[in-house]
Image (cartoon, rainbow, N blue to C red):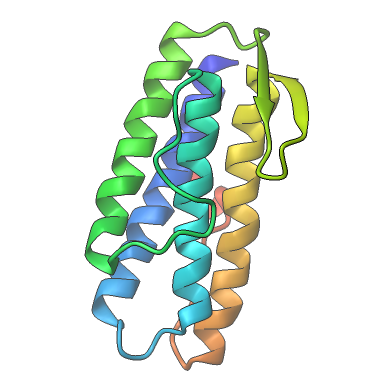
Length: 147
């Protein structure tokens, strides 16, 4: 299961880096909503990594970073997740508190799947937003990545 998760995170990281390129190249034509959603993807990834490792989170869930920092933050998140995959039992339990103060508990496996799924969901929204702005959206389907 760990090798499969590694592949999923490689896929997610690959397209996050490509989105970073899009935002750098088209900072004047991409929408604020698209940039906000991309920030949300990387912030949430950092927050979930922190929850798994029981460490303080660095970012707010909707915090906005300079466009030039997004790829670096994504790379840091990716590297940290690879460390988690190497060192953590996927069946281990993670207890955490959400942004509303509610307490929950999930397996590391479920949290990792959530990170990938959450990112994919919002990249779809970003594609729609880029198209609305007259930009060619990335084709980010997993199967195309694997071809």
